[in-house]
Image (cartoon, rainbow, N blue to C red; front, side, top):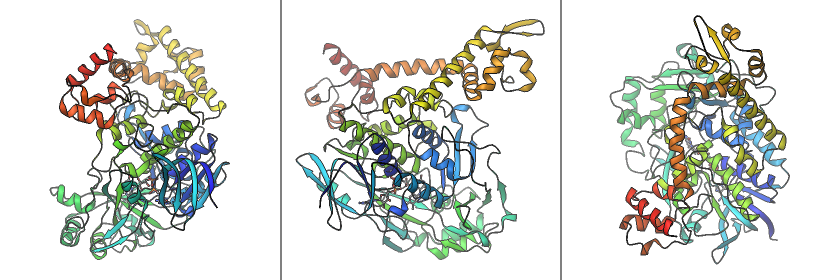
Length: 609
Ligand SMILES: Cc1cc2nc3c(=O)[nH]c(=O)nc-3n(C[C@H](O)[C@H](O)[C@H](O)COP(=O)(O)OP(=O)(O)OC[C@H]3O[C@@H](n4cnc5c(N)ncnc54)[C@H](O)[C@@H]3O)c2cc1C
């Protein structure tokens, strides 16, 4: 029997859960089909969410109505705000999660979402009709019709794992790969690459000697991703820090001749910024030690994740090297580290909506578009789910700008920079990062939150209320005067002094009662108002750049423009523009090979109409 759905999501990872939840909550009957429904949103690598720039992505996912923030908050066993010693633009929340609970909580949410049907199955074929997608077919022969199909296959497509000289087809260790679907996309004319990533060994906590390591606790107060946050948090656990040493490195070096990375058996490109331990000792040979973090995997397990020791060396080399590390002298491995190679489809083959350029109704998102990381996957999954639902309703897609959100930076980078290695988000990728702070996520995304419609009106009202209170605080600060010894200055001028804060009880006598009342009522709004006053100079300069950026973005390029006949463009620009058909002049300016002179030519042509 053939079943029919509005939207079919293929893959129940971080991207797939967001996509299915968004599509169903926007009113589409949604099938979430995945190899193992008990493994929804399973964390393949470290049991942690957020961190530098990734924390921003999670807060944006939460603001737009996604799940990752609240599932993280409900399962966090340690949370911290990273980078507090630096400027607020780069503060980033991070949480260590209980791996098992994370997947279970996500399973509970997905199973209880009206409109989602969760089924087990491996999809091997896309059913098409001319250049339209009409459904999918599973390995066991079931067919499902879908008006829109979202593919979110993670590291599973033709997945091949490696430990030393041993390799085996798998999506994650002890989990079947997905075979067939990737080849089907190639048969449909899509271009594919091979990427690689790796994971460290999992250790038995009973065999660790923590007294030889440094304890690291989270922040005393919870750091939340979701708004509103949950009422309570799980019991909190510490992480532990230790280091590799010269002896560790010598043992690791002795195994390089059996490393799949160095013998050439791994063909896929790995993430340069997240190297394996064997990569680190080769590339940074001058360093005599590397940090290693022991991170708990959950409340009901003794298992520890060894952050910083990703490896695919032979198992006995891994263990011998671990035994040289302080605190790990008698360690047992529950599971060795390994590498996985998998297929990806470069993102220049999708539009900013994440719909395939050549195949209508087909959306791609997550690791298969060349990113690495749960947060990057969730962000894309959410946008694919939203845009699949919108395209069904005949609405224009929601495309976030680089000046609006890290999600905008992420998708724009994927499409215009066409990464040739796993792409991970960094704060340095966002040119307007002073505006894209984690503290103002809800406020800066408010128009998009309204447009998307996944947040209940109550939340939208609360965001509006917070914005109003922030404005009221800013007005009071600019109009009130503060009397100091010998002079009177505006409250804003006083606040600009580095040592002054609205939250310092010792300075409370300098502020008026209405101001203090607003600070007490809404500390988050007061924090934003304070930041904007302290950083006003930088923000004003950034806004000038944003204006220039927006002017270029406002020039829309016709989707059917024939660039091959535009002789005034450079040859390289003609070819790139014809292949990628950027949506705006701004996007065209970020494509490789398109020069400032080409943009000037396009601007003249646009002006002439
Ligand atoms: C060994 C390893 C190490 C990693 N190391 C890191 C790291 O150091 N840093 C980092 O940021 N990220 C790392 N990652 C990546 C991280 O796990 C992914 O970025 C993230 O999980 C991607 O989410 P996703 O939703 O795209 O895919 P996944 O979480 O991989 O989920 C994909 C889901 O789709 C299902 N599926 C796939 N194909 C089909 C099909 N044809 N039919 C039905 N179901 C299908 C799978 O069963 C799976 O449930 C690592 C991953 C692995 C496996």
